[in-house]
Image (cartoon, rainbow, N blue to C red; front, side, top):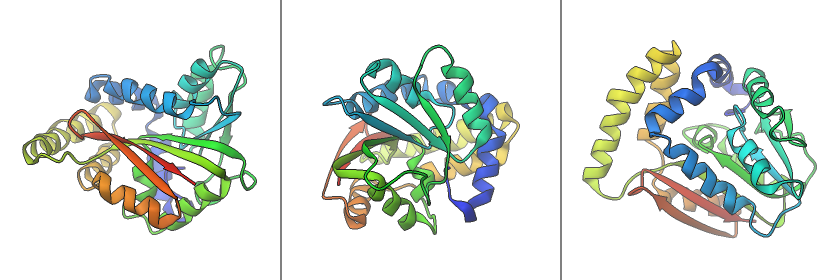
Length: 237
């Protein structure tokens, strides 16, 4: 579900890489993606919401973490447009995330009623919904539609470091290591060229905050992670 119906190239791309997706994420973030995902999950579960939607769940890392932290208090639903990703998520969650639902769905037309969720979380997938995406506004309006009044959207995503030297070496690492080695390990070089290109050219945190406010969110906060190479945004409806 990293892009909607007209975005089939992205759907095909993500359907082709689930068998190596987790390994590559851990390898190239030095497992920091797990720490950042845990921080986002903790933010999602503040005040013990009844339901949390994990948007673009992929192989289910965020949903499984949410379920482990929430126990039986909170229903976790993971949604994605890639059936191979969802199959991997269901396999990973078997016996460890009972009660978690994984649903096939599209970010441009989520299969939920208005105001279904007090919290929506998304981990390292929001970039694919908003980076030079012609359906960006449809994705954002769908998020607002399925959020309850007063609900919040929690995003953990790559970002742009403020310091030029940090930004330079981060982009160099992405281009030199992640693009080449990710493509080599996965056997899908085009997928990792796209992922690196979108990360290098993605919004600054202030720009993403403004995008969310312009879409209709009332208040947006963000927290840079590791000198700004990633960030957590929290946007309230």
